[in-house]
Image (cartoon, rainbow, N blue to C red):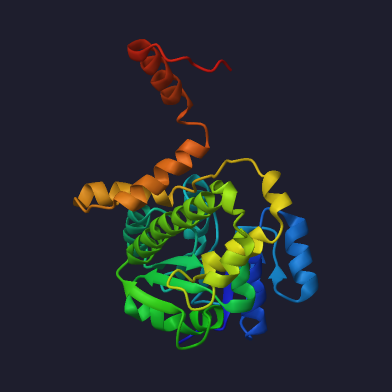
Length: 305
């Protein structure tokens, strides 16, 4: 048995676009979000039929049900699962498409299995461009559950035969996505540092925007991230308005934690994470101490705030 009906919980930037892509592929979506206006807007587009509670969502789905959650990791996801569980029946399937910690996914999979509920942990990449281009889906779970939701995966992916992969048992999907995001940190940092170095050579007045476009054609560093960089560089004035602050969602930290646990050297990934912290002002205290040490042993002057 496969399904062409899914309940989707969490209709933000990712979840909303996923509902749109599913509906365009002929997958019927019943959606729920705490933001009523968001649900109504998607419903007015024909992307889904909305309900006003998780209980109503479960009641609207015929058994065996498939419920896909696109919620922030941690307590919000756990609370949603605890609300859903007593309303579900053995044979139903929950797919967690949020950026959960793979260890949490392993625990949740075992917990839900005790109640006869299937669980797939799905790492989703593609961002806001997934609606048009398709998503990259990496998921873990039992093969029998994967078979049941294959039409959903194929509808969301770039194509029915690519862009989705059953990576292994429960936890494997979010582990794979975690490593993916760690690599992303490293690639982004390398590109940003390179263009900073181009910008620093003022005597050459290097045309950064044109160089980015140049590298998109035939260069070994061509990539979607470079494409996005080239687009950003088209408006250099816009860059001046941006604060030098880069958030970290948590997956970069988990990647480095996993590297330490397994004794795998990942210096680029780890340093890219540290640079995120530095951008958040978390190196200011250390920098001040460095200046004072330098003054102490060499009498060097320090700049006052």
